Image 1: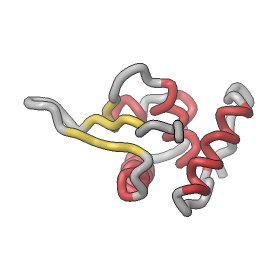
Image 2: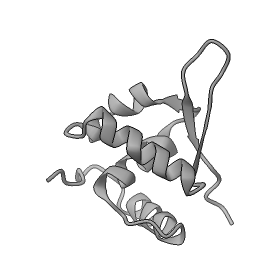
Image 3: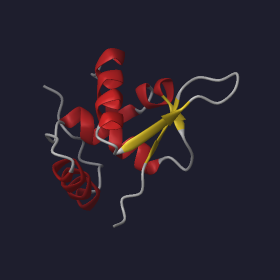
Image 4: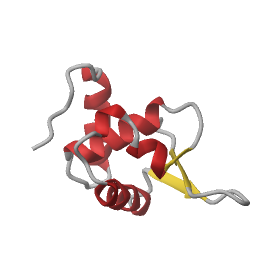
Length: 96
């Protein structure tokens, strides 16, 4: 089992858990880490950039992709395909 690293901000983790709960989703370690990577990004990022995040070591690419897909379906994140590029993901506003 992969555990949350101690260098993650506890307040950030709490915010992510509440965000997942509000969407009716379970707060799994993978979901928390994927959302954390997206929150820390200053611009949309690709699946490969998320996979290379040091906090996500121990998760395979397909697990991360499935979580990205689930988070898109829950309208917590968005994805788009820039011309000539690959899918990029960004977190939707967490403000009410």
